[in-house]
Amino acid sequence: MVTTSFGHPGRATSMRLQDKVVIVTGSCTGIGKAIVRRCVAEGASVVINGVQQDLAEELVRELGDDKAASHVEDLSHDECQQRLVDLATQKFGKLDAVVNNAAMIATGNIHTTNSAFFRQMLEVNTLAPFRLIQAALPQLRESRGCVLNIGSVNSYSGEPNLLPYSVSKGALMTMTRNLGDTLMREDRVRVNQINPGWTLTEAEQKRKLEEGLGDKWYADLPDVYAPSGRILWPEEIAAAAVYWLSDESGPISGQVVDLEQHPMIGRNPPKDRSTIP
Image 1 (cartoon, one colour):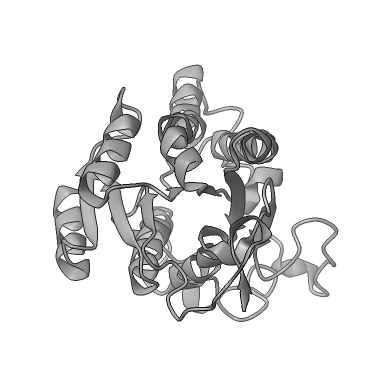
Image 2 (cartoon, helix red, strand yellow):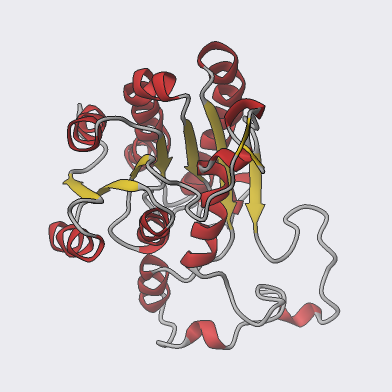
């Protein structure tokens, strides 16, 4: 036996997301792509969202148009969120979960960040997820569904050159805790968040190449950054996401879980201080 939504016992199945319908933003590449693949493998139908038409169409072909649909549009556009919800309900008849994964990742610090850039970061990384939760709430209330926000371990402080990104993810984390409480009490909708650590995505590979690192920069990282000898893979984040999207997580709401290979707060310093840049 397993525990289903809100503490009711149910029968275990091999498909942990059987017959669920899930919207995953930013799912043409990286962590989002890994999540939609895992969701379909676990029995769900998915709505793919991103800005790359060719990649979205390719992923739908891979997963099958009976299990996947795509909507290619920038989430900062007005009404994009409602169009995603409408596609889910028209194609699959309902909506059980939303994964707010899409994010703008760009460098900036106190000296290089202007107000327009900061607003754009907040628009994509914080306000767009908020608007999708708003648009999806009537459907999620009906299905007693859930929201999973994909944050970042940078939420707690962040790298010096990731100031606006880190602030936007910190705001997302506060929103998760606020709505995780409010929506559970008022609507029986769970809201949780996972904060991935350093993950080897296409976007991260591109960012490191632009910084002048070689193609295999991730193969020889100091222990201070990768105690295990490597960084995380998108598939490992997707595996964790399934728990929060499934009935196995029961009534748990308003929680933020860090997915990193070392603690972010109170970490033991490395013995060799020369490894710290």
